[in-house]
Image 1 (cartoon, rainbow, N blue to C red):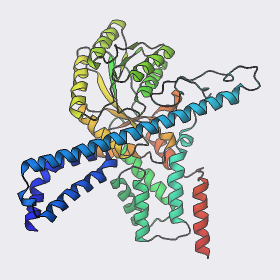
Image 2 (image 1 turned 90 degrees about the vertical axis):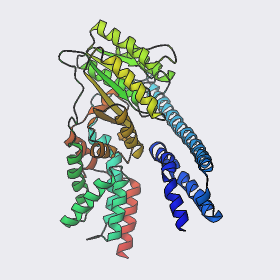
Image 3 (image 1 turned 180 degrees about the vertical axis):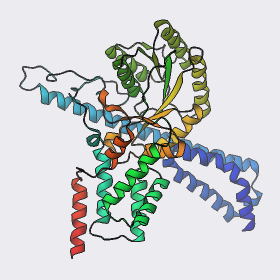
Image 4 (image 1 turned 90 degrees about the horizontal axis):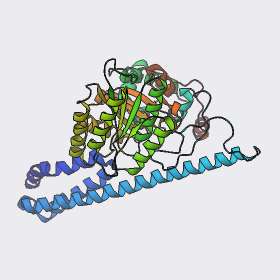
Length: 457
């Protein structure tokens, strides 16, 4: 047994690299990968050859494990693509139903009255550009974050229903509920600690405690809620980074719309040259917004496109340049080299450069991993969390602020151009956790009613 343990210790360094990759790039495949590692060591122990395993055999075993994990990664990517395509099709059907609903009884005119918003097109990287009417007034943030708030409050309300206090096991259940929102383990435990100290045992107490903790956490990093503004004496450049599918290209265009409306001369550079859809999408937005877009031939080097774009920006006296970068994270060293090359080109024209990460609020801890990776590649000056209007999670901005010290700058709460909003910390936290006017889902109400009925019996 002692020999097996010694052999295991000597092999840890060799196996650590693929395990680390598993955690960083594909949490879904990690459990399977570690199980395979366990099987290998079990077989080694059973055969009694663990101490005699040669370095060549060990390297071969490691290579086979990495091959299996590569297949798991490809499988996960395929499933993600299928999910994205399904969402696009659903949005397309919604747009078609909307058109049919509004075309009846109006003499054949389609779409009713009012203008249209080029950003309401049915999802990230969609080839279609259907539009829906723009709301006359932006909806309040509380209504946009109703899904997160009602889902969390409903679960907590169900846990506390009909009880003057809760047991230790129920505190553990509460901790699991809080962690499931992606706010982070430390934030959840701090909330529980304060609840115990105060002797507070109601759903309302939990929500109020969360408001205090989260407000404190997201305001720690300098620059939270800071909007992009032009520099006083030179051109400003913003690198928009993020993985594919998070809303990066759309967010770049929304930023352009927002900055143009504020009176800035804006230019967009389509440096995500490895995805033809991203380039064509940004070109379409540029035409609609009357914002110039610099792009290259298919499969051009991003650095080449940026070089051309920066030269044009200097000639035209542009205030702010937005660069939509390639969204690839599978090869970190290549990502770092590419971003470093882009930054070197930019710095020949201006020193006023910042990098903003776009993450999907519904992607859970993957968003935190992405933030860590990109922050190493190019120090981030802020994060934009998208798709917060349709997720019961949405607490990832808290984890990013707490663990990485990266400020939350903007949030995306819908498809309209008005739904990219700068962050007012207090308003944001109130919208996440305020119980006033919070309507529980029908499912949550049913659970609570059943629990209260059981207690009466």
